[in-house]
Length: 378
Ligand SMILES: [Zn+2]
Image (cartoon, rainbow, N blue to C red; front, side, top):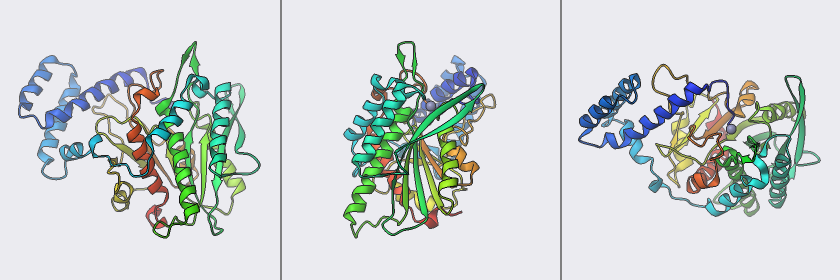
C-alpha cells in the first residue's frame, strides 16, 4: 500500500492512539467493572476528547449487543476460529521469507532488488505451467515523475479458459516496496510480499484444479491473469500501465473482476480481513458466506473508521492498485488489513506477520475469483 498524502505525521500519532483505544474495547465489553475502567481511563486523560467518542462507541455497542452489534462481531473474529482447508502456511511462509529477505533489498523500483524479485516471480509462474502475456512474463513500462522519466516492469502470467472466451478476471499484488535506507532494509513482508505469496498460491490452486477437472469442483470458464505490479509505492504506476495495456491489447475483453491483494497477513483487532470494492455490495451478504464457509475467516465489509473529527479518513479508493481500475470502470475488489505499527517501517518482517491468517485469506480469495458472474454485477 502506498503512503499517500492523506498521511500527515499528526494522523499517524492519532492513529496510534486510535488503535490503542480500539484494542482496549474488547476486554471492556465483557467486563462487569466497565464503569470503573472508564472512570480510570477518564482520570488518566490519555485520549482527551477522543475518549468521549470512545465512551459513546462502547455505549452503542452495549446497547446493540443483543441485536447484531459490535460485541458479537468482536467475539467471532478470533484466531481460534480459523479452520484451514488447503491453504499451506509453510509454502506461503517460504515465499514471504524469500521476497522479504535482505537479498531482495526491499524491492524498490529500478533497483537490483526489484530485478531479482521479478526473476523469482517469473520462475514461480513458469513452474506452475502458466503462460506469458505476449513474449515474456516481464512486461516493462515507463512513467514520468517531475523532471524524470522512469522505468518499471510488471510480471504477468495468464491461464486461458478451457473453452475460448472473452471473459477475464485479474489478480493483482504489487511486489515493489521501499528499498533501503543506508544499511537498513525495508523488508515489506506484509506490504506486499504477503499479497504476492497469496497470488502465487491461488495460481497454483487454479492450475491444479484446472488440470484435475474435478466434477465436484467446476471452475468458471474465464481467462485468468496474474499480475505482480511494480512501482505501486511511488504512485500506482504499474497498475496504471497495466490498465492502458489491457485497453490496447484486449479491446474485446469483458473484465469481470480485478482482485487486489495488498497487505493481507497482519491482522489487528478484530482479527479480520477487510473487503473494499467498486460496487455497492448489494450482494455482499449473499456471497460472503461462500468465501469463508470452510475456513471461517472473518471478512468485514469496510475498514474501521477512525474516531474523532481530527482524524482524516483514509481514502481507501486511492491507496492501492485498484484505483486505476476504478477510473477505467473495471470492477474491482480489494482485500487488505488496516494500517499497523510495522507499516512502512523496517520492522515489517516475516516474524511480525500471521501466516495462518495469510493462508485463510488465500483460500477466501480463491473462492472470490470463482464467484458466479451474477454476484459480480451491480
Ligand atoms: Zn506500501
